[in-house]
Image 1 (cartoon, helix red, strand yellow):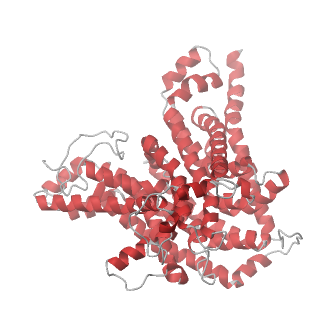
Image 2: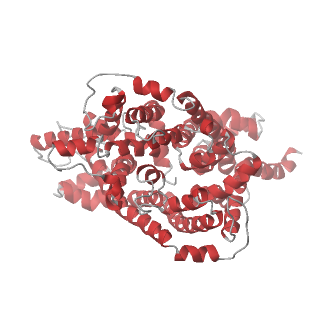
Image 3: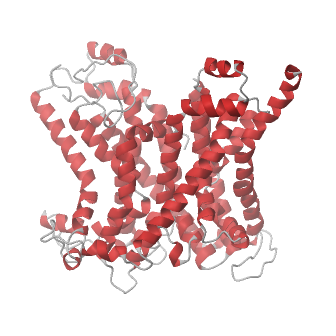
Length: 295
Length: 312
């Protein structure tokens, strides 16, 4: 009797185990996403009132200079910071991949900021970079590198770089740790053989270590770029979008419209644009991960 | 092979961990990466490593040193490098800031605890089911569970906020914990599925022979076997929830419900005009302590989670 009942029972059992998580995703991700699409087609406001207005919000976004400025600013931020994070992360990995006590110390120190929250790290650097009480300006002045304190937050270009410095400090260890694993996973025989053939250090890095870490580098680049495209905390805290709205990111402009200006419909349309951009990026990332897992 | 660190960027195999991670297979050999590299190169490399390490620690150390300066010295322009005199006044100030630090820390801990609970309750059965039981359309369902990765939660905050307001979940621990669970669920399911898949078949068979049901097998055989995975899930859920900012900013808009990061931003904005730098640094120090403590104690799990969760 047991054997007859089993297929049906276990057929259901499997689903029952997955069901709670599935329900959670449907309720708190898929349903809100559907609501978001609906909302983006209305003139909803947190102050009340809502009318179906079709694609008007999207047309408005197209004509909204701040939307384009924020999108371009976010893309620029991503284009600047991603190569810095990857190159510095890989350099740190090369530097610390050996297991001497000193490289362990350096590796720990490089990784430590990764566990710090973005809000904490942003506030920390907001203080360090301050033109009056900040230590960075004090150090630069004492070293004679600058004559006057740098005022980071009155200029959008400087503000961008202030944020980039803080985020590089906070995030570089993430790439480093993944690259160290990739480097340490390289077959010693291969490196030995190359060395016997007379390949110098940089030649081995270029011809062996780098190609064999390519997948890790690609994945980390994608994860990092996606994170940068969603930047909010660091700008909210350090530049507050200013001066003159010039350091709004896409997510920040969306937040600003939805929760400060109460334009829920317009904010929803901005959110959909973000969703589409990120969706493409993550799909690429998952395809790469899965292909890599099989090989 | 006398100098392990000798320009030895890629030399030296063995534990990856920062102070002793998971051992990697392979011959434990130490080789100089640059044959014939001089002693001078080794010293240079050592100096670079030390400099990089200290440079990375500089912001945190300075923040701590600044937090124990007396308030006037902490706000002095130009700033002092080292405290001229020590004081806990900044901490005293933060402790009684607005609703009191204890309230904010409790809020953060409560949300983190619920997030951990939700992640475990949802991801353990899901990971087990996907790894070990027959599930029709398994890969498709798995992909659905990974959906929160593809749809940034930042975009969902408006509809979630509207729904939560209606359901009375705005300004509640449960409400924010649900958002933090959205954030962590894909990683949790992914990691636990991997862990469940790695458990040997014969353990399961033996329990089945004894007539155990799926649930009993999950409880007595699998859970002990995937404990490292569970620790990793808990760790990541805690750190993500403790640090999360934008959802906390939107969902906790009542002063007494603020989490620690939101309170810190309040200090930054300086309710009385000028920013209280000393109090701000004290707050930053307090906010990073749990993260550092967990990292120091459970580094192994943290690093292994990071590596296995490249999908995150």
